[in-house]
Length: 438
Image (cartoon, rainbow, N blue to C red; front, side, top):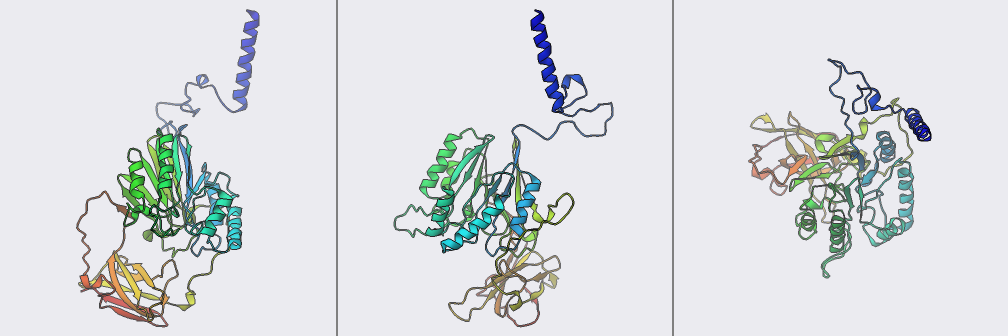
């Protein structure tokens, strides 16, 4: 009996020593300890609650978006260090990680540069292919040699993560062009998704990652997205993509689909109003579902506010800004400024093989606008332009919402470049215009 008592006392001492060495206190030793807080509770207390926002099933991860398409110097490499400051459990991607080339030596150099960045992450990074990464036989083979699968899945804390390849060269129609550039989800990939769903039938949430917003295409039956929705019909899921370099939130069948902006990719960077900003998406998975936010890279600083300096080079601009003509102005209707319009400048082509040029801008509250080229600097190449108008697109596209009549009425003739009476000639020097839509 004495021996048993001595062993019990010794065991208690060992446990107590371990608890104290780890900074753990016995909850029973202090009746004021609440949910991990060791604090004296009185009749009145200077706090709202002692229940922390934490749970064993809760976790957080980040998503980086497009880095390419005329990428800008230093942005992605700096984002890697900023993600390390945020400390997610892992990092997902949505493709277009390198500029890509049909020359395999160039491809490998670009991958070596990119991998040098992501290896600095202090947490796992999951690759997803984009059209810049694996959109032809050569670049697809390079991917296979270095990373193997271009479509795969995994589970984490009872959530299913599916990484899809929307540059799927597998076509279901033997007569169809087997181009890698036609975004689709072929039958083999559909089978992989079905197998993942069956294997993880009890997953509390499913996350999809892909490059193209194929849920927003014209023919969802042809590209395979309707089959994806059928496979996932009885579960909650959230989808993420990139490709367009402009943020949009789509709602379909009560599920959220996010088209992310950029993480260094080509962009006019006109701000959140346009959906043009450098970002990481931030997902906190809670018991009732994911909480999603979008963090602008311009708002992530070190603890001492010191600059994060990297040596990542950028791509040369597609158009030399020195060759662009500024185009600004104001739009009125019935003598009043007209906000909320998308102003479109469509270049009149002098030759049939001339590359199309379309600039765009939103009208502000005072009806003013400033024209930008696609993913470029302010201004457009000199020449004649047809000026047309449309309602400025919303950042949220809800396919489930009932259609309502818009208060923004645009005269029919101004809606199409082919019918608009407004033609302007951009010449050297600043161009300033007043358009009256009457």
